[in-house]
View: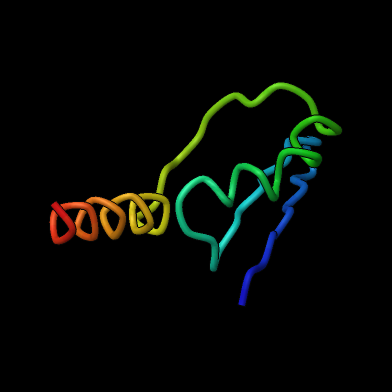
Length: 64
């Protein structure tokens, strides 16, 4: 299941977390939130981000 979780700290700082997305889908899905909330101060990339990329590379190697 694809989800986007938004956490707002008492200080007003926000945190956007995505799960269930592969590759850059997470950035595309949360882009409207980042635009509304302001500039990104940090980013943590998870294994899900690279999952789509490594699957594509494996498929390309098999086809070649």
